[in-house]
Image (cartoon, rainbow, N blue to C red; front, side, top):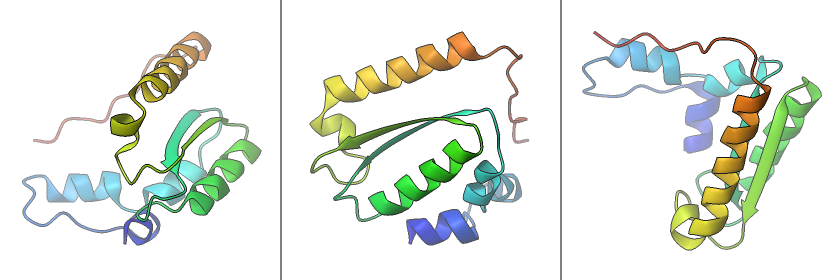
Length: 117
C-alpha cells in the first residue's frame, strides 16, 4: 500500500489542509526522481513490508544516475519505522553524517514549503 501511495498518490481524509497535503504528498516519488544535485538518505531494511528494499535501491540508483548524492543505510531485521528503535547508535550516526555532509556541500539558500492556512 505504501508503495502505491508513493507512486500513485493518495489523499488524507479529514485533514484541515487536505488539498495542500495532497499536493505535497501525492506522487512524490515521481517528483523526487526528477530532481538533480540533491542529497538523499534512505534508511531501510530487507524485512520492511511497507517499503520493499529492492524498490528503495531501485529509486536510489535512479537518483544517482541523475547526479544526486545518495546515501543508503540498510538495517538487518528491523521492521518499518523501527530502525531507530533497534539500532539507535547507527541510526543517529547515519542521520548526523548525512545532515553534516548536506550542510557542508549546500551553497544555495534553503527553500521552504509555504505554511498551510
